[in-house]
Structure formats: structure tokens, C-alpha cells
Image 1: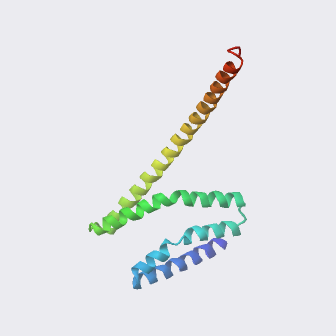
Image 2 (image 1 turned 120 degrees about the horizontal axis):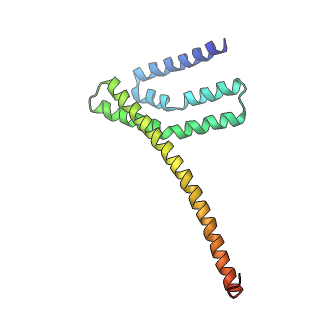
Image 3 (image 1 turned 135 degrees about the horizontal axis):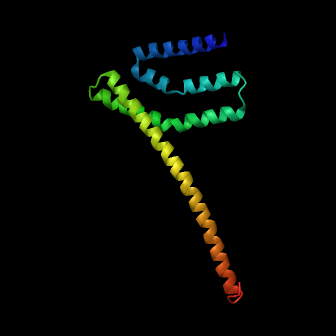
Length: 142
């Protein structure tokens, strides 16, 4: 029953936004750009009893997905301006979205590995500096 309520509320919101967009495309676009889906999802997860940690991870995921969504929308806008059909524009956008997410994932994996290397090299450097400093203080005995 709860699933039907969620679907109904979500469908009503989408219908309202679509009607606004028919009368004013810019206004409809601005309303559609609001994080309604994210906020609704956050609300429904909260109502269903998910932990604050879970909600925080969800919100972080939404935030991490924002750059890829911006790329998708930019590609769709440019494709439509170049007179590509809607379906082709959306497919191009989805491909750009997926590519952006893959780049984000690769860069985060690469960055986290580099961060560990930098951190461990930094610690080794500090230990080496400390050891050489101690040698100088002790007259080379350390």
C-alpha cells in the first residue's frame, strides 16, 4: 500500500511539473531542476525508518551524481540545439552521463591510491628527516 502512495505522489508531482513546462518551458525546467526526486526519496527513506547514516550516504551519493547529471543535461541541450531528435539527444546525454560517472570513479580510485602513497611517502620522509636530524644532533651517532 505504501508503494502505491509513493508512486501516486511522485506521479502527481511529475504531472504538475509537466503541465507547468507546457505553459512556460523555462519555469518548468527550473522547477524540474529542483532536487524534488532526491528530496522525495530522502523523505520516503526516512518515513520507512532508514538510519541517519543511510540517509547521509544517500545524500552524498546524490551530490556525487550531480556533475554527471549536469553533463547529461548539457549534452542534451547542445544536441537539441544541433537539431538532433529528442531520443538521440537523450541517448547522447546518457552516454555522457555514464562516461562522467566512470571518470569520477576512476579518478576517486586513482586519487585514493595516490593519497595513500603520498601519505606513506610523507611519513617516510618525515622519519628520514627526523633520523638525519637526530644524527646531526648526536654528532652522527643516531
